[in-house]
Length: 206
Image (cartoon, rainbow, N blue to C red):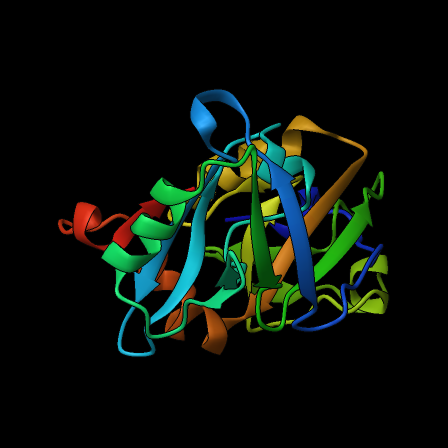
């Protein structure tokens, strides 16, 4: 948790269009995979990306934690059994995979430069923004309470302790880029991406 004294102001660098769909043809990498793992989310039966290998073909194509897989090899996957999804992957003998995906619901990317006196200008508890200092870059660029931090400088921080998130933020003293989503969205969807006892039953690797 942060004290106001060491939290500099913020600023919003880029704001992705909400729920932007992407049509991708991604060349396979090592082991015939593109480097993502999807998790089946119940009861909606959606497949959300719960892991992306850094510098993998999927990562380089722009896929990120929390993005939804809509189609695989031109077949809609919503409501599809995971065995069928795995079949599509296993039977694909080409050196690439076709995907249609959708960005995280309500995601925002906010880049905040550090202020020498006031820091980044925000506090968080359990990854949730609880305070934004008025009249700071963070406030002007759209950071506000009731947003959940998903990524810090492209590193997924879901499930991390606040002290570990703070360490990542402080690793770069001049600027930080946050990926945030509304707390309501996080609780409905992204909290279900955390590891569970039934991982093998709900995961598919691409």
